[in-house]
Image (cartoon, rainbow, N blue to C red; front, side):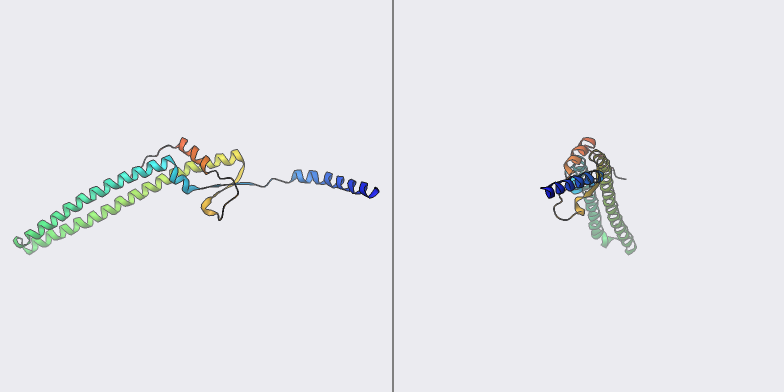
Length: 181
């Protein structure tokens, strides 16, 4: 019985000594995960921006197609008139047609570059709001770190804040205007 009392006393002493040490141990930092691809696919602002960009792209393609048709007609007329034109006049008109074609190609590339830049600007604006929301959630839930899902492997066992961020994003930024620079 004496040895049992001694063991109990030692255990009580160990728990007393371990208690303050355990209380002083800092909790593990909280980590959360976010899927930015889902945000860029499902966010109302992203959907609205994609629709605006697609409309601008369609208008651009139609305008370029009309100019290409005009250039084809010019080339056909030049081919028909070739016999009645002097070689110098024919060569001059041919150079003009080739220059218009080059200008048209350049304009198409510039328009595409503007659409790409507008798309990047929209993504950056959305990402800026997402960063603000994530910062808020980090403070609210004391997350030490929020990791982008594409940077992880396997199925993470930490909280996924994607839907929470999506809800706040849709309320804060329901639409975004696409502007071509």
